[in-house]
Image 1 (tube, one colour):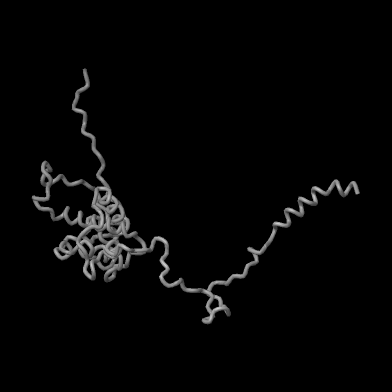
Image 2 (cartoon, helix red, strand yellow):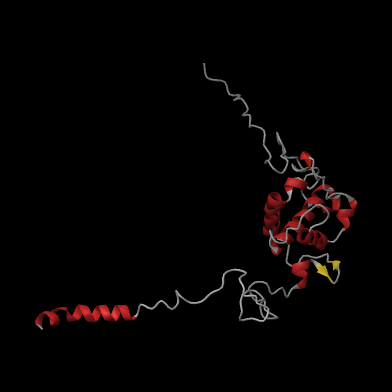
Length: 219
């Protein structure tokens, strides 16, 4: 009897611990993907979302921001200010996603066309200089011709940033005297590159040659 009392605390602790060990959650019924179910009339275990369900982050109330269109026509305004930060972001995303085909200056001389793929039109032709900015957003979102859609790869805000940067590229190649800020040299000194790059490669600057020291050593 004394030996039983000696082990009683350990026995009570074991009973208390094992009482909480239930496997209901581990053994709950579940359906394998695309398996049959006799519970539903259509025998499908996979169910459609309740009508009107909207996934988190997918409530696109600002139609223009997500389509670039006003009605069925492309709009001609940015949905947010085109700041220096926006243009810098647009240049970064453009160089990543667009330069392989369109080239770094948007003239269609990217790396992929050099391998036989159809060359895209230059952004600097008159037709594309006149289209509304929403047109570029819509083409990026849904694709056009042989160009695939980028709506699933590039966020809506980044697509607007790219569209703003395309406008900056167009202005850089077609600016008039009235577009030049006061005090700016015309023409501006062009950057020097040994290789301008082709979308798949970065521009390469020429090596810096140091001028010889004109001072004579004391004799």
